[in-house]
Length: 271
Image (cartoon, rainbow, N blue to C red; front, side, top):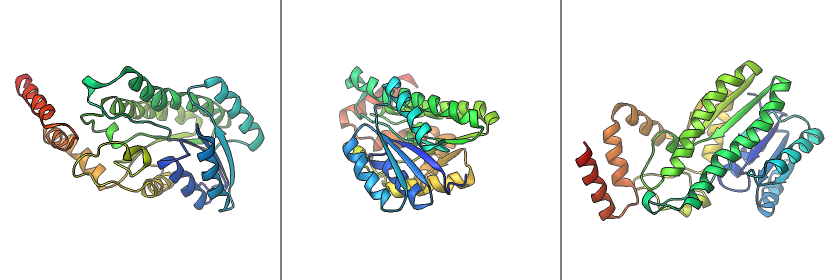
């Protein structure tokens, strides 16, 4: 995809990877950026940075789980600013907790934001793209969409689901000249991740590196964009040495020693 002079909509654009993607797109020649997130104040700060680059910015302070409001705002934006050529679905949340201590409210939060919110905005944008027979959609999954890990069960489930959603859309929307891609970063140093307990031996990457990988993938039209050598290594191990990788993940996970022993005992009894 040639992004020069095009319009993009980035969700989750107020912080972290979404913010970095918006800035990188602006630096690489995007004409107009529609930034969507729930926090208007943070959106305004990102918009100010982008406007200094000479790029037009529109902020949409919306909750993706309010479909009526999203539909109205998107219709107005499409009417006022023209068609959206690129949709980047980056909005997401993560709660880290052992499954037996998890709370249903947190599970619903991850599913609603990571999946239902993505479905809501994608459905609205894809229909308009299909009418124009043009567009690109990027869904931000995660390395945990390929390799699940202890203490991140629901988050991993949503990220696996995003890959399935992406693959299905890629086949369905190809007839409408719409490309659908997945971005799979590994641990990234963002404010959301700083609230989590990091896995041992995992070296975090910067949001800017993830954003640069996305732009490179857009040019190559890569169906899945794995970011960083750790991601490639983990995916390779999951295919070739799945049991070895599972043991490594268990050792690296931020679990107590007692939790780890109980898990190992359970695995021994069920094997």
